[in-house]
Image (cartoon, rainbow, N blue to C red; front, side, top):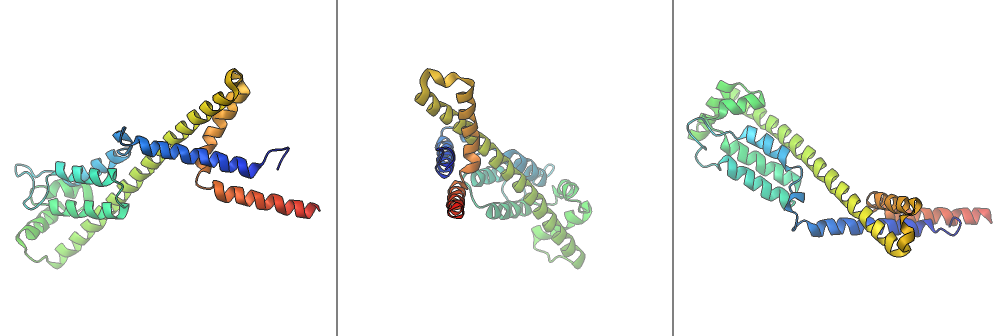
Length: 230
């Protein structure tokens, strides 16, 4: 308690505002599908580079066309499938899409010898066992594809989280301004009240995940200092 201000309660209230802002953002997603697609562009770019259509051959047999692969990955992203599962599915679809017709283009993106990867793709298509050198090259291809997908999904997830936090912060600011205006009426438009409302809104989303723990810690600290003071 500082000059009549109960800090634990203030922090809990501000954190509650942040939680409400995230809740409103979640509720708005069906009406604004673009929210769930934030960050997806980079994944599309990386996967598109790794699933080119073979020159004059189209998609390889027993594999999805590139457009369907991208649609499948988009569906998983929009529905919030676990990132590890999304990456595993993407890698499987990329490897299935590899063919002698597109191996040269894929090799340029994965730093694998084009001729060797073309031979590997042909062997995989016919069910021929890979030689030692082919198996080693295919293992390197697998690791490189894994690394590229990991980078794509991690960066895309970071973009998504940053954008959603920013949107939630904007919603929290609007809610704080609306609440302060309803409380103070015409007096709200003073610079002090406007600044306070905006500050509360900006603090709401960062405090939302830790508000309970922080308020408990402050309450404990206040009680401790009161005991020491006595």
